[in-house]
Length: 480
Image (tube, rainbow, N blue to C red; front, side, top):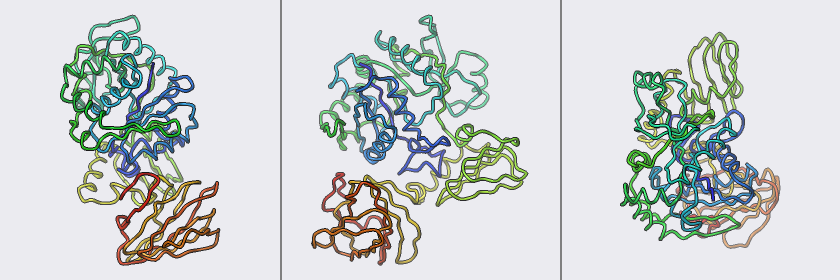
């Protein structure tokens, strides 16, 4: 049995201000209108027949967003399985947990194809051919990694030095893994012809992976077994949801699968991949997806160039005009603008780090924030007031909750609202009607209809922080 395992995490800090902690890189919409996560899910589904099994390892906070993206891909014919991490612990614990879970469900011989959710692959036929090759090697007891033939002296990728050729299709042993090099070293790797980019994709059987972890990372494996034993799997609507035990998973080391195993094992082989691959690791990589004009400017959104050259500009809503500028990256979002020289694309992560150190909201959240029930967008705020646009999906509902410090006025602008307010039962609020929720009142907002419910919420009070909430009941399992 072949099972794709999607690793969906990582902050993607080099892609700030679009990638943020609350909506990281896999959820980014690319210039073609699709997200990286949606593309990865379609690619995984392409490896399977109808009814196949796809595992996603992600943070518990991204579960509902991930399901929304999968539903948008319209591939419900595949069975979903989510392993939900309480905290980030890098790729080795994530892959170990997936292998242990799948071994328990399907036995030793299940084959895992591990793929990060934030990579872009253009030639999917070539990808499937490479996976078929890797599966045969995995069945023979190898740990397979996929190597990408370098096209430039890239300093943002790790490398694999190839060894002895093992078959007529080009698989080789691995002499060594090397970290991201400087430009001089990367140029040497490119010229030597025996180095590949490390793609971070893998293929192996559960029994081989776990046996090698027993040899090279026994403590990690034992912690993983304890974690899985304490993590019940719940099946709802044909989807397995397994929330990993918080205290057990937090004990696992924060280490990549390369460091924990691949650099140590003598079972590792590399399959040279012939498909076009990118880890979309910077705004330069995103810009390369957009056609260039005669001055080599690239634009996504409403953009005007005057006497400008070699720029990439992305705008989510506003018109952006670039006049007399060269070699810039300009990214405009609702609440933040990035302006960077094209040669400094890798340094955008320093902005995200500084914002995180200052605990600035622009590191964590966008103005539009996803929730299990829909989204809210902060339209305006000031001392003692905040105005939001709230969209509730059909059949969804907010928690039964209460606020200590704020009053809320709700005006329905689309759909029909079902409102519970202060123990007086529930009532319906139609389009162009309004209701008032006083501070201290226990209340709930629901969408009983078949179209989105859209309301404008006006908050007023002494304190308007998102943490002023007491939940009494919640269909999504949130307690705070």
